Amino acid sequence: MLCNDFREIADSYLSDELLVETNHEVLRHLESCAGCRLELTARRELRSKLREAFHHAPDLQPSDEFAGRLKAQLQDVALSRSRFSVARAVYVAIAASVVIAAAIGFSAMYQRWNSQNNNANIVNAALNESAIGDHRDCAVNHRLAERPIDLEEAGRKYDPVYINLVTAVVSGTLPPGVQIVDKHSCVFNGRRFGHVILKYKGELVSVLVTTIGAQNRNNTAQAEELITSAETGGYRLASFESGPYAVYVVSSLSELENQSIAQAIAPSVSKHIRDTERPT
Image 1 (cartoon, one colour):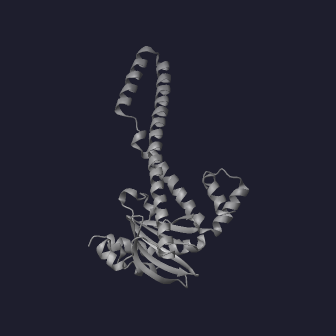
Image 2 (cartoon, helix red, strand yellow):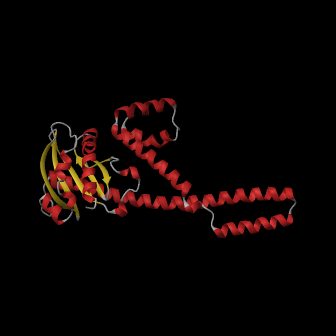
Image 3 (cartoon, one colour):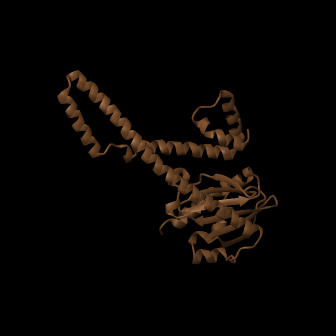
C-alpha cells in the first residue's frame, strides 16, 4: 500500500468500514510509515474534537423562545385531549422538537466549522507555498529580491525568537552527517523567516521559522509538535506549530528523511520558542 492509497481510505479505516483484508494492509503500512501514522493521529484527534464540540455546542441547546412555544403548545394539547392522548402527544412533540433543534444546531455548527476549516486550509496552503518558495529561491537558487540579514541582527530588530535559533536546531537529535551551511533571516513574498540551512546526504535542507499570529493558530491543544507533511514542485515539507509560530523543514529528501529531521528538531525548537515567549 502507498501513502496516497492510505490517505484515500484513512477515514473509512477510522470508521471501521473496511474489509478485514484491507485493515491488515493498512496496519502493515502504518508499521513502516511514520508520516501516515502522524496523519492518522491528526485525523483521529480532529474527529474527537468535533464530537466534543457538537456535544457541548451552545447552538444545540434550545432557545428560551423555543422552549416557551413548546410549553404553550403542550398546555393546549393537555386541555383538549385525554390523559392517554396527552402523554402520547407530549412524547411525540418533545421527540420532534429535540430532532428539529438538534438538526438546526448541527447545521449551524457544521457551517461555522466548515467555514473556519476552509479558512484555515487557505492560510496553511499559503504558508506552505511561502516556505517552499523561500527554500527554492533563497537556499537553492539565491535569487531573493531582498538581501538576507544576520540572524542575530534580525532577532534584535524584528523578533527575539531568531536569537539562538541555530543552537535550538542543533540541540535536536539530528541524523549523523547533518551540517550547518548558513543562517540568516530572509523575506519571501513579504513574509519574514528565520532561516537555518542544513546539508544532509548532499541535499540542502531549510529550517524556517515564521510568526503566524494567534488568529491563524490551530487551537487544538495537541497541535504543538504535531508534524504534518506536504509535497509540491518536487520539494517535501514537514511542519509543526509552537505558540504563535510555524516551523518548516523543506528539502528534496525523501518524505521519511525530511520528516525525521522535523521530528528531531521539534522538541528543542519548540522549547526555544516557549522560553523566548515566556514573560521575564
